[in-house]
Amino acid sequence: MVPPFAVAWYLFTIEFPPMPPRGNRLACSLRTVDGCQGSFDAYPGEEPGSVAKIDPIKWDREPQKPVQEAAFTIIGDLGMTGQVILVNQYQWRDLSDAKLEKFFYAAILWGKSPFKVIEDAKVILKREKK
Image 1 (spheres, rainbow, N blue to C red):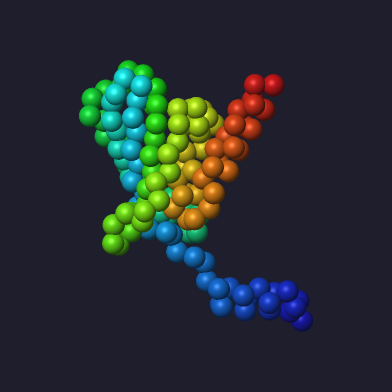
Image 2: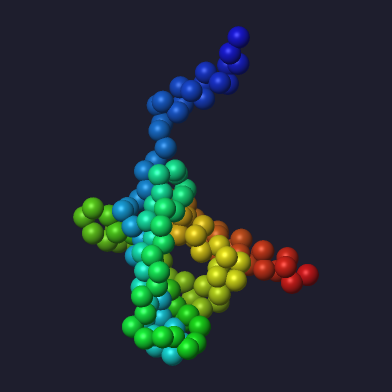
């Protein structure tokens, strides 16, 4: 005998397959305190909520100071989707110190809340300090 919830779940997954990523890649731009510009791309994975590949950062010159501002936008088949997410120096530092950058990129690519990832990074860092 198959449990009723299993049948309902099966019918739900057939009727509502997982959503595709919001674009082909995530274009990322970084600016440091000393004026260096860097850019890289992140690509969605096959599984929902995953990131397949993150390119290395290409800098115009070697940065000597920390990142001041980061900008992220999704690039689709027809170009930029229109949404730009800006992250300030403190938010980027929290993300990188907590090592949650990949989860941040996945949240943007798959239509989740990237600022929730930043909040989680702050909570993780506060717990580590105690």
